[in-house]
Amino acid sequence: MSEADKVSRTITGRVSSSKMDKTITVMIERIVSHPVYGKFVRRTSKVLAHDENNECVDGDIVVVSSSRPLSKKKVWKLDRIVERAK
Image (cartoon, rainbow, N blue to C red):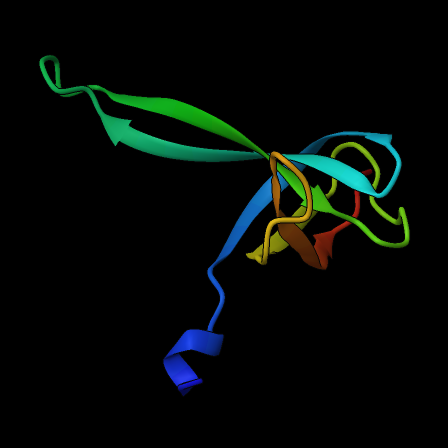
């Protein structure tokens, strides 16, 4: 296995749900330009991430990294918590 194969993709987002056991829903926001009007609009994506110790709560800003498939929709794992919810 080469060094490039071991690098996992990381993304930053906000926890929108932590009600499941060992799973969090992370909302990723990005700003894109509208193709016709040129106005910048927000687009969001939701991903499921593995939270082994159930340490996240709604509103936390977290970094998740890609991993092997853990279930049908869960292919991310919690890397670290950047900022706790107030």
